[in-house]
Length: 475
Ligand code: ATP
Image (cartoon, rainbow, N blue to C red; front, side, top):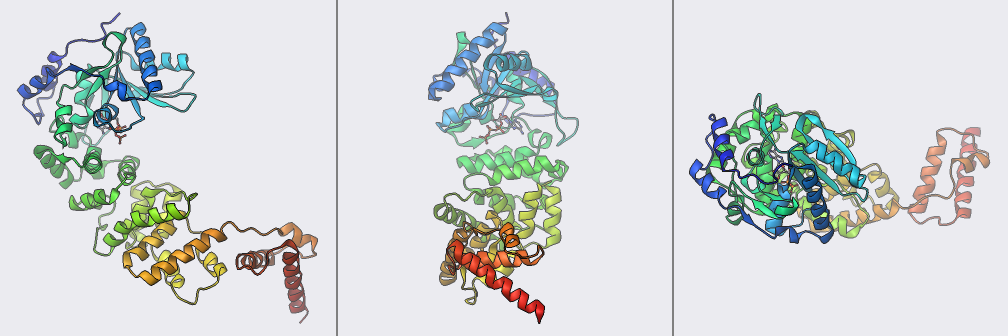
């Protein structure tokens, strides 16, 4: 059986020897000094009891398989920060995929294996997801490419990570359960609220880390350590990000915009001139800024007023960001980010169509609920939020309350249905044809406006329409 824990000072030397091309942002001596700070910790007790029990069981399973098992990455960081994080990332010094298979069998969990990256994802019957990887070192054939990986020690695995605060681990094997590994000073950086890359090539190897840096900086209110900031600015000023595939760039942008307060992150993207990677003409202009800034207010209002209202927040922010852009710019952005059909539809609707409807809505001639319904029918929830954000941005109180009233009326109208359908029209003697749509829409409008409320009234309404049509046909 492999010894679960091996001393790891030597790895530090071998890592820096491997990477003669890179100078770490701390000196070797400092790394070594930190390496001695390996301590025991009761961090795991901060997890919910059932998770803790599961991790103990997995540690036992790892003992039996003769491998070392660690909890690693963001969850360790969040345990230290006392923040909830339900993503369990595990890493195995040994064959991680074989271990994942054993876990899958034991718990009847679904398993997806990604051989190329030596990673796997387990989905437990009750929905819990756990990622299990083999500890590995990564090399990049060229900047921004996906890495080639090969098995390596825990320390090397931690060294390939994005920031020191994400490069800590806790051992789960029974004899060393709870042992805390922090070879690169992550805990010290957490205390100092600092984001620090592990080596100088970090952003060049993987420019997605630029977005990750902004994400963590804004989420935790941290600052980028000086050298890290310089390296980030350097990487941002090149065209490295251009080399990321659409889905990889989209993933980072969406994660950034899904943060609790993405407005600050957007400002940071603009400061670092990173919006150009979505489109070279996309700018955070004085016209765009108020709309983006108004999105949180609009989202809160909609969530309070309409509890069932589901929106894809990142899409709303993207719509707001591109709300002053031409359709051609938006179309290129959609392609660059490889957006889904639904996201693309939303983004395309974010411009002139919304503006046209907006004008009509705040025009006092739009008074009937059915008129509002017809204007807004077909708009996604995201488009409704953007519409409201545009009005919030203008700061015109009277029009804002008018628009809010319209939105409330519209949401109510969405629940209306007619009792009678096309089948009933046929039974009532009307030949199928395009007039069905007109009559049924008229019927729904009458319901929405409260002109009819019962089935009998619906029938009378239709009879009247049919009669009208027949008279028209005769004359
Ligand atoms: P979040 O709290 O947003 O989920 P996280 O730190 O848990 O953040 P994940 O994307 O879930 O981030 O990744 C888990 C861990 O994998 C990270 O903590 C980090 O150690 C490592 N990691 C993820 N992406 C990268 C990357 N691009 N480069 C280096 N390490 C990465």
